[in-house]
Amino acid sequence: MTIAPNPDPITPSQISTETVDPSSSRPDSSQHGTLYVVGTPIGNLEDMTFRAVRILQEVDAIAAEDTRHTARLLQHFQITTRQLSYHQHNRTKQTPRLIERLQRGESIAVVTDAGMPGISDPGGDLVAACVAVGIGVVPVPGVSASITALSVSGLDSDRFAFDGFLPTKTKPRRLSLEALARETRTTILYEAPHRIRQTLVDLARVCGDDRQVAIGRELTKRYEEIWRGSLAAAVELYDTRKPQGEYTLTIAGALPTEMPTLSEVELKLELQRLIGEEGLSRSQACQQLAQQTQQSRRELYQLAIELEVLPNV
Image (cartoon, rainbow, N blue to C red; front, side, top):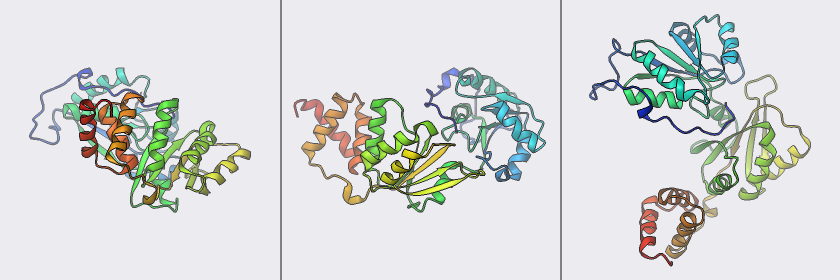
C-alpha cells in the first residue's frame, strides 16, 4: 500500500484514442493488447497465485510501482519479464505511453508493492484510461489487506465500507471522521505507523471510547498481530507501544439508535452550514448528510435546491 494522498485522475483527453466498436465490450485482440491487473502478496510470498506467476512470465512488460521492490518478487519466482516504472509521480507521462504500447498489441501487467493495484495504490488511472479507449482489462486477483483484516476482525462483515487513508489536512480529515462516526457499516482504514496513535485518538473522540476496533499489523508477515478491543484501550496501548509496520484498522459501525433524527428545518440548516461554511458543493453536502442521518440523498438534494429560494432559513 502506498502512503500518499490520492492524485488527481487522468482525463481521457490526456491519452491518445482509437475508434472502438461500441457494440463490443472488449476490443479486437488482433488490434489491441490486454492490461492485466495483478495482485501480489502483502507480505508472505506463499500468497502469490500460480496464475499471477504465469501472467507475469507471459506479458511483454510489467508496470511496477517500485521496480526495486518488485524485482525481489520476480527473482523469487524466476520471472525475467522487463519492468517499467509506474507510480503516482510519473503516471501523467507514463499512462499515455503504456496506452500506446497496448494499442500496438502488447500485453502489460500492472502491479503494486503489495496487494491489488488501484486499492489505495497506483493502477486505477491506468485502468480508467484503458476503459476509455476500449482496451481489455483483466483482473488477476490476489490478497488484499482490507479484506484480510476484515475476515479476522470479529466484527460485522456483511456490510462494510473501505475508506483507505484518512486525509491529513485538518478540514477534510474532520469531515471524514464525522461521517465515519455515523457510518453504520464496519469501516476499514489504512494507516502509517507514525500516524496510528493520533488516528486512534481522533477516532475515540468522534466515535466514542467504547467503539470496538481491530488493529491488524504486518498482516501475513512474520510478526503479524491482530489486536481487538475498544478505541479507548487502543489509545492506551499505543501510549506505551512503539508503532511498527503497516496498519489496517477495522472499526465497528455505529448502532442505528445512534443515528440522529432531524426535522426538515434542521436538515436545511445543516445543509446551509455545509455549503456556506464548509464550502462543499450541493452534491457533496447531500452525500455527507445522507451518511450522517440515513436520509435519502434525493430528498436532501430537493431541500438543498429550496435553500436558493429561502436563503435565510
